[in-house]
Length: 109
Image (cartoon, rainbow, N blue to C red):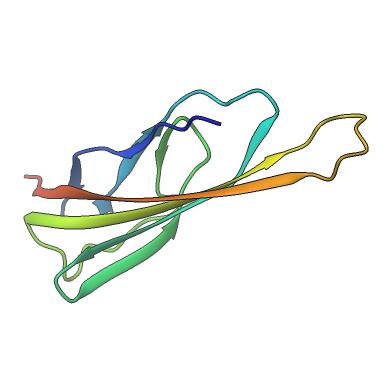
């Protein structure tokens, strides 16, 4: 299985929320995305969220902006997939992928 999952380089910060987004390559035949989660950490501030299952994904619920500021941050993501062969006697297979990436939080007007 080949995966191409990334956070977008920039997360937008305004008075209402921190918007973290990313992209994932097309689904592989037979593999189904079960879950996607991420953490963003900047200094002593961090937040964990579940993400949508779309190819262009975002946090599934609002991230409060408190404590985050303009500047560099680290994002850590995980995705869990199921491989199930219809009509096969073989048991289902699972794979969990994790990655980390530097992102930039940018204050929006």
